[in-house]
Image 1 (spheres, one colour):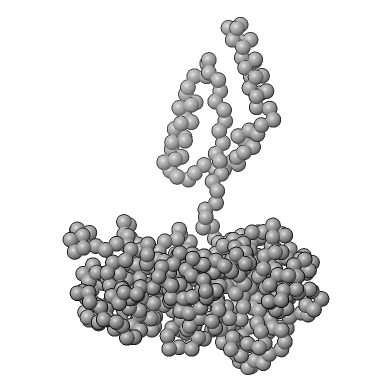
Image 2 (image 1 turned 60 degrees about the vertical axis):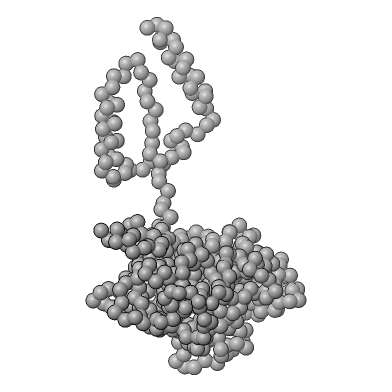
Length: 502
């Protein structure tokens, strides 16, 4: 016993010396309440009782272990609403008469808040559904040395700061865009609701052109696609922006000046892939038909590309698309893939926009990759100059897709689902020698879908698509929605279908 009394204090002193200068478990963790999970609580309480019953003689006391606080979930939402967002739109007086039609397509009078900033006064009708229009402040005191650009970049750079100085009440976010940028307003709210508006955030996306991203920066939000700045960051930017602009007289545009100031503030770009610069030419079918699994936030360069719906003028085509957005904006352009097992067709749906049907079986890995219906911003560049994976347009006459564009979408209240009708875009096709059913016999596709306003509060996943029986040989009926347990996109034979239904 005397020997034990001598050794025990020595051991305690040795442990204290060893831990001196190092943080303890208590310092590294934070106390939280035990989990509300019933089984977990039972286990903890049972363990506690067992420990209490153990004899303490000849045993060292167990060190106290504290529960470590769990990190917040990835999809913690904030109560950001449309009224908390101020849009700053950079416009040109020279192009105003054309481009104001794009703004009228997405702007919601009495709901959306913001200002259009122009270089000089423009004319507007008394009842035109447009934001307030203001003339930007004079920027002649700033140097501009880029010979390929325009001095208008200086005034556009200051759009966020000038909008901030208007003193709008209860603003959490500033969203910047051009006069040819179209915003899907509800999806802007959905994306911004993921972030804490009291922190410094700079949200946006890069260009589709790898060369553009190299010339400017992969760390830059391209302004035409739109970007968002939280209110505290906008305040910090406004304090130093004029000095910052003076330090970069050789930069080309407004968005690279914004990024240069963000670099000085130490705020990186938080990427949101739903902001689309669309530095491309030609037909957007390949891009919009295989949209990434993220909310569609914006479209840009609509004067450069072809109308997204054939046969319509560009502003009318945008208004037509936004009619579908009224019924289910969360699912707009979201892709789903399925197969017709009896006719061996591959089907891809871009909800609210287009349905494409191909003969044969093409894997989901290929179908979710945009087909190159468009050209690079640098027309001499090939497919390696894109900042994402693409696939070539099929040249074989039997593998060309049959394209069905959205005609109308309506909400069926009794069944609580949307009904979309898509008509085939009829154009002359080359003769196919394959001895199999041809989608050319179809005139229309009907897409049924239950609206899911909470889809972006869950982990991202592509919708699933199913082929339903149809009474008409000229109409295909599809059901699109959340994937069921165990459901994947694959071609099922008749035998597999029978087993799955058992």
